[in-house]
Structure formats: C-alpha cells, structure tokens
Image (cartoon, rainbow, N blue to C red; front, side, top):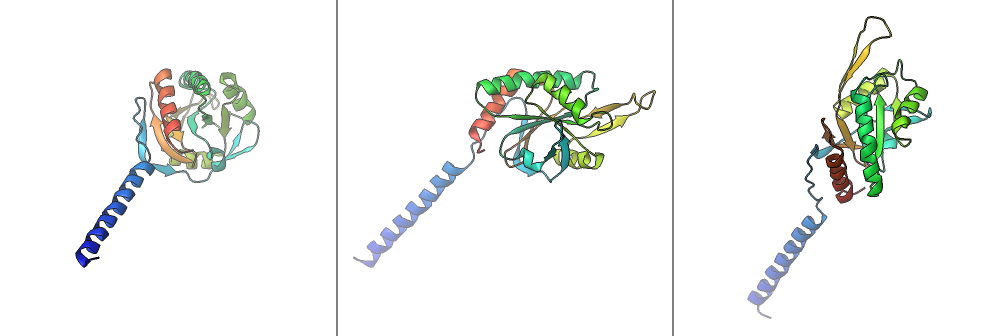
Length: 207
C-alpha cells in the first residue's frame, strides 16, 4: 500500500472517530427542557448539609432530598393566606403528578420554629396531603438552608409578643435527586402549567 493511500485511510479513520465522539456527545448531553411556569438554572447548585426535624420527630437533612425530585416551599402554620393557598395548589399539582406516575416529594419548611412544633406542623401539612413533609428546626439551621435555596424570611413584630407574623419568600424551589437546586417557580402559580412542567423535567432528566 502506498504511503499516500495509507495517509488517506488514516485521515478518514480520524474523521470517523471525531464524528463518533460528536454524535456521542449529543446523544449523552442532557435534553433542554422548555417550561412555562418557572425558571431552570443552567447549572444546578449544590445544597450544603443542614439539620432540621420533620413532623414525626425524625431528623430531616440533605440526605432526605437525595434520590428523588423535591418541591420545597417555606412558610408557617399561622400564615393567613399565601401558605394555605399554595399548599392547596400543591395538593392539586401532586394529584396530577401521581396520576401521571411522576414521583415528587413536597416539603413544607416552617420558618416559625417558636410556634410551629413538629406535631402542629404535621397536622397542618397533612391536612392538605398526608404525603407532604413538614420540617423545621433551629434558626441557625433554617438560615443555612434558606441561604442555600436563595430564599429569605423575617419576623415582623405584632401588638403582643405572640402575635407576630413572618414575611417569607413565596417561591417554590425544585431540588433534583442529587440534592441540588434546579429551578424556581414564582407566583402566581397555575396548577396545570406547573404540573405539566414538572412532568417534563422529571421525565427528561436523570433521577
């Protein structure tokens, strides 16, 4: 075989290898998901470990967010409107996801640990859906989690020491099975649009 022919075959082989790598990259690349009701991060953000307690008195930490998709919402049981309205909406969203066989863990984090005992938090969250997880904990641990989720809250004094209220973010935070912040859904929320978008995300991303 002539040297020129060998060179040509070598070039063809190299081009074929490069083409194969390109095809493989596209095949293995994560699919782009277009959603209508929220915003997905280009690069999911890791969540540092934290230590809260769930409504059953069990520890609730980062490991409880691993292995499945989670939708996290913060609030408090004395909330007059935003919290009950949002949890009622999430009940409807969860019903649609269950019907579509799309697992989604809903976590309600109370930012009012002074009044929201685990027992009270459990009764409140389970009123909307028995599968909803209620969790709270010391202020320092709540602050740590809120920073990781890029959420804020603040205590607003009332006329009496126990009549205060809590200002808090109303966003829903989507956490992927690797315990990373993946996206945000801001109000006003629409049940059908939110359920449809969550089905897209959970159905096209690795769990």
